[in-house]
Every structure is written in C-alpha cells, then in structure tokens.
Image (tube, rainbow, N blue to C red; front, top):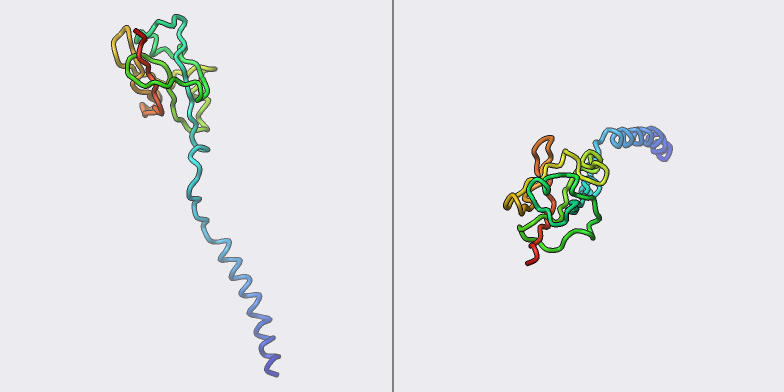
Length: 146
C-alpha cells in the first residue's frame, strides 16, 4: 500500500515539475554574450595617397578623397612621421561600410583633416562628416626624401 501512495504522488508531482521547469526556461531572459568579437561589428578600411602627380602634397590635394585609393592592410605605409601624407585607415561599423566608400575612394562622409604647410600637408585626423566623430584608426605619414 505504501508503494501505491508514492506512485500516486509521483504521478502528479512529475508532470507539475516538468511544467514548472519549462515555464522557468522560457521566461528567463538570455544573458548577453560576453567577449563578442569586435572585428565582426567593425571594419578597418585602408587608403593610400595616390594623386595624379606623385610629388603633389598640397593641402587641397591631400584633403581630396579621389586622391586616396582603397588598399589592403599589407599595402599601407610603414613609416610614421608628420611630414607628408601616405596612408591611413578608418574604423567603421561593418553594416555602414559602404557609406564610407565611393568606389575605391573614401566617400564625402570621410573628412580628411590635415596639418603641416599648405605645400607639404599630412593627415592629422579623420572624421565622419555626418556627425564629426573621430574615425581615425591609423595614420602613416612619411618623411619626404632629401
């Protein structure tokens, strides 16, 4: 008789327990993933200075988006000084990447700020023209050969 009572209780307790566990599992808010790979959310775009005249480092020429060509990270300049422009990279949201490109050149959304003189300019900062936020990742200016 005693085993019959245990079975009767088990017959009711087990389904209630399963329903309670199911409700608990479906009403819990999932924890946000930690350690999300930031590289999936952001992209680095690399550009190299490629004016028609390779000796033209005027401020107007350096600030002109069409004088910068999209490259791979392995094609960027190595030396970093603040004499004349050579290459730069920007970090943008992956989903917005196309809005920063005009074919193989930076779009007008990329504002290239320069320093130096009007005849020998270098890149000092890169901004998103839509909200003036800094999108500078890396700037590789070079020293002019003597």
